[in-house]
Image (cartoon, rainbow, N blue to C red):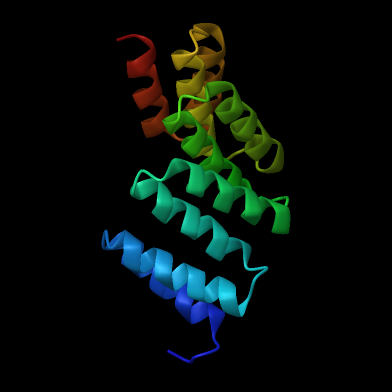
Length: 151
């Protein structure tokens, strides 16, 4: 790895994360951020690694930093919403998912997560609305949400 190449450390962090080596992923992402503090993807991946270790507050902070750097970063909003959901902060999760959809309306994974969040908060009607949208975007995710709605 080139010592001052942030993207290399970021990519290493992604690989470590895929291998389930989350502590090493955190270290690699932090190194990328030290080199390039405004590297939104590195902050977001750092948050994902924290989430994988159950460190949801740290994850939220990392995802928020990614969003501060890159306000139109839909995936960071998705990941932020997921971290909020893990802490039972369902309204915050819903708000983050809605923001992701404002940025990227056809982001199927976000519609699925939003539908699931609506189910958790006992809003079946809105969950069904997300199912309807998902049918056009990703039939597999739509069927998964449908199963949850009618289980």
